[in-house]
Amino acid sequence: MTEQLLLQQIQEIQPLDQESMNQASAHLDQLTKPQGSLGKLESLAIQLAGITGTQAPLLERRSVIVMAADHGIASEGVSAYPAEVTPQMLLNMLHGGAAVNVLARQASAHVVCVDIGVNADIEHPRLHSRSIRKGTANMAEGPAMSRDEAVRAIRTGMEIAADEVRRGTSLFVTGELGIGNTTASAALISALTGLPPARVVGRGTGLDDAGVHRKTEAIRRSLERNRCDATDPVGVLAAVGGLEIGGLAGVILGAALHQCPVMLDGFISAAAALLAVRLAPACAAYMIASHQSDEKGHAAVLEQLGLQPMLQLDMRLGEGTGGVLALHLVDAANRIMREMATFASAGVAGASGEVPQ
Ligand SMILES: O=C(O)c1ccc[n+]([C@@H]2O[C@H](COP(=O)([O-])O)[C@@H](O)[C@H]2O)c1
Ligand SMILES: Cc1cc2nc[nH]c2cc1C
Image (cartoon, rainbow, N blue to C red):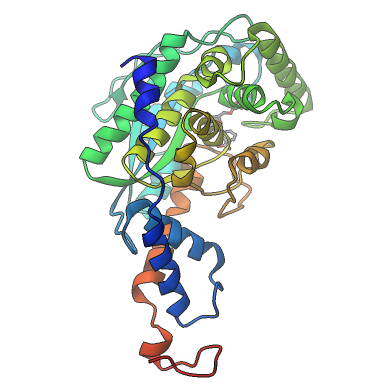
């Protein structure tokens, strides 16, 4: 698929079903509670109805797509951990031992691991081997990847989403793994929004102050070296992005094309979401922000996306952990829609003092 075809395809993302949203809203107002008192659970229930065209959709198969890739910029000392951790953690995840596996089991979610650009040869029967290249190049010295590779990363994510929909997935969670990817995410966000690097640079896996300074300088050099055009999101991804960021943007676009909600995890997922929105603004309506990561800059990106996080747990792990945790809130919203009594059925007086018939 060429870049032009891809861009055409994603313009077909549909707006939400307003009629279903009105119905969900009216139903919520009949339930035995003061109007609006369930707060964000109510807006979530309304959004889910608008996305799926169904009141309280079942959303039985939920998949967290973990895109894993390496980053050339890691050689600049921008992470608290060595690059070898990416393949090692990917194997851990394939064996079910990572935090996301534990939280996914608790939330009955399915973990899909994708090698979209890890700098190692990993074989495992459950691994989706879709490597585009073995990690990006060092973006401080030139573009992270070619334009063609950037398009292929996005397309790979869209294909994985389509495959998962065929397997019955009706809700997606974004997850990722990649030493150095908070640097690439910060650079991409800075290039797309014009926010200065210092506003979006954080400690990642746990850098000290000197490390944060090194990281900020590496981003400044990368942006200077690549001279990105904010109106060309694919160009920005190629220049200062990451393969997993492109892949996740593809998952988000694919989910929206198939009218599935997509639960965003932390900072890297937000960078991917920003990229997806710049490519096809209609996909924003399908996004749910699970949590606000402790990574500095996440709040600023969520604001740019117009999203309010459901949770704030001081988490900064990635993998899809925050996204999977917030699935319990999706289940809660759906149970409210299905199981709560109405003022009429329970014989409870409304604000007017009357019990509705
Ligand atoms: O999701 C987040 O908000 C988040 C914040 C900080 C770190 N991470 C994870 O940590 C890795 C990137 O951190 P770093 O310091 O190597 O750039 C990568 O594997 C991410 O999944 C994730
Ligand atoms: C151990 C470890 C686990 C991770 N999971 C996601 N990013 C990670 C980074 C590190 C270092």
